Length: 421
Image (tube, rainbow, N blue to C red; front, side, top):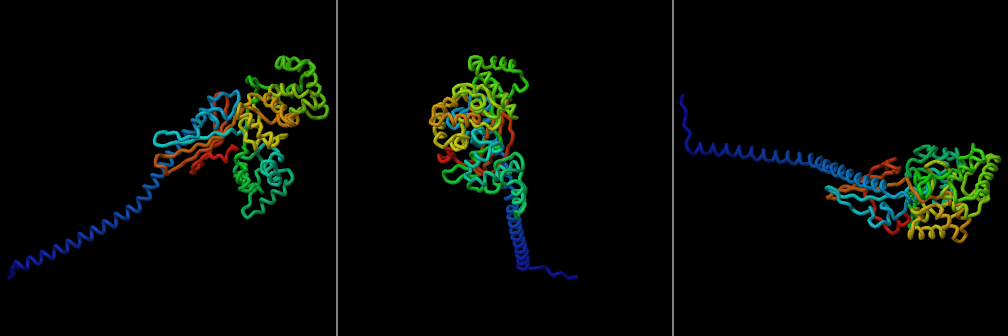
């Protein structure tokens, strides 16, 4: 079979054709790989960013928790003789906690608020709430939400059930202050504040516990502790605890007032009854109020710390006015009150003081055991913030967390307009 040999020019032509095909295939492969690389990058990049964001959020959370633990340690080793804004956790101390603190690869800021410097929404009455909100109907609705009664009662339940997205009132202690936004008549302006008027979020708390002890740390004597005691046993007990502070005549008057209250179907329910039922004078009562109380346990609920409460909170207390609240705030910012008797003596020295003293003194304290902590953490990149909010209870050997929440928003800077804190 005859086979023709290709000439040199023909072989060169075929070689060039093969190289062209190879070049086209190579270009196609490069384009394909480029498209694949772009596609993979488009898919992987969000995942990488999400991973980075998740890592930043986790680091920010750890930093925020570091601030929370520092605040708890500060509270644990704080002097509990009295609590004021001059303490290491307070806003008037020499080195406030609310400054950026470096930690590892980021920073944290932490704030501590005295929950006893606010009014306990679960224990207050409609009068105080009306003073705080400026709206009588909103105050009554809060009471109805909490207790299921008041001026609204069952009719209020019907209002909530008729809403486009119905719900029912709690009819129990509020768990968070944000719950107030569900209450009829509590507007965002009332809750968050409007201009120079502070909001309920800065004036109320869902829990406030304080030590029921005197300036020396001794448990106060309860006015009703002797309900099953004889008069002689009562005398002996009071003499042991209050020797040098009260006379035998005054002891007999306290007991007589108690027996008359019992005969009327009640007992001591407020310290001002030492004047009305027992007939003691103001000076004697002022000496006794740091040593005696209606409640007899080691802990007491719902008392407001005059050393830390904003003027708006003080003005909402029975017998107090806005003018008197400002006077109290000015005095405590110069020198904190160390005992309830010192508060009583100060009130007696003010214009209209005796009436304010009798109404206020059973609602105030100078010690606190419940605090609110806000701690924000962020990484060096500054792309992620994490804020932890906790309600803590301080006891003799621990500061435990009662409630804790987390959010991705930074803490706003402290402003002069928030001086009510």
